[in-house]
Image 1 (spheres, rainbow, N blue to C red):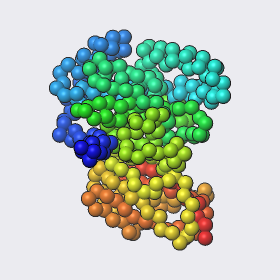
Image 2: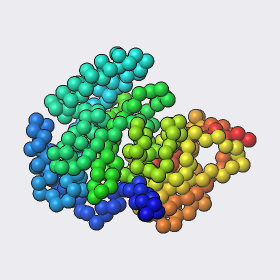
Image 3: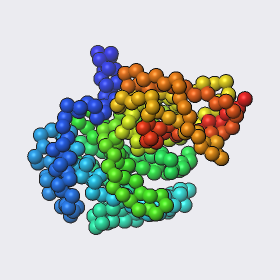
Length: 333
């Protein structure tokens, strides 16, 4: 019995979208897109319209998730203001609580009136619409890490996403990052749906999502917060091209010129060696590196690289001209 339970836990830990490869989401997506003029003044009615003609829980959740991701805009100004206030009050628990209470009102007021919000609003709306469709969906609070994010060990949590229970398993998704990305210079948001954040592989998700409650990592191993801060930078393209990121394991790497650095990824789709590249930046110029030892077997991509000269380098991994991940290497002789 013990071994059976261990097996079940392991299987549940890797619940992902591929579990539903047999499901055609075309109807659910079509319903979500047909409801794009719906408001948020009557959530029970919205949930009913999105789910009434769908047969399975995963299709019903898909319609809800897709609707939220394609109708709710990310308000980067609101996010930036909240971040500044939370950093300002991080050592004053009373002021922080007062600000959080006031800010909750601002979040939901803007969500209801203008269909604009931040991660908390996205996750809340996905959760509430799911509940109205009799689906068990939770909000997961924690830390999200992107190329634009600077997180210190003492910083308060900065991100919220969802866990959804389907066919007895828990799955992870991030409606905020799936909806699109605000321009960091203008703060203008553009809808650009990324399907990779829907029921993502937990091991890939864990590279840039750290839940406050470890049970929501849905992985077999616990990662410390310090280890999370040193995971590689992943971009949205990683979720549409990778099933797993395997190596390098760290963002910051200290090596010497005699070492061969291993890069390894599990792909969602087959690629050719010509679609794989590294761009290496030494702070003065960037150069594209030719890779001549690429191995691709059963959708697993592997290659190595050795630095000939000492220095500090930013290394960017691309697939078919799409930026996937970034690392730094401090190279000594």
